[in-house]
Length: 121
Image 1 (cartoon, rainbow, N blue to C red):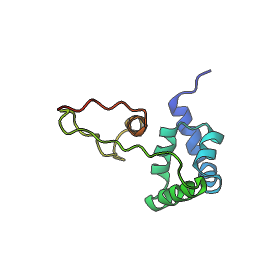
Image 2 (image 1 turned 120 degrees about the vertical axis):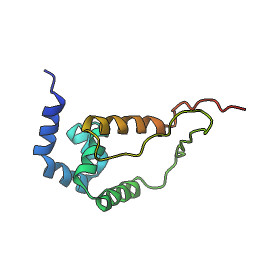
Image 3 (image 1 turned 90 degrees about the vertical axis):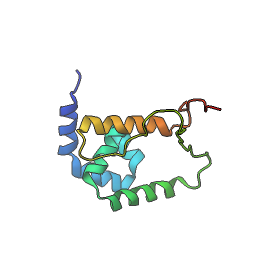
């Protein structure tokens, strides 16, 4: 049986306080795993439910619990001569499906495996 996105959304909203309590107590990765919430959806819910300061605090706690980073952080740069528009800034005014897609694409862009176009001479 397949659950529609609307049913998933309703489920998340019904359990909002429990999900938020888990975010604050066990952190993002464990909450993501416990509730089986896709990463893009999890981020969209955080944006909808939490203030910017709360999201920053979660990020700080999450990063502190990981310890010093041993892997190199990917830096996404877009060549200025590729004639492509820049990636748009996120907007809370977009439809939920657009917000989720934005996060999915953003994650692909910041992935260290994302193929960048060859630069022109």
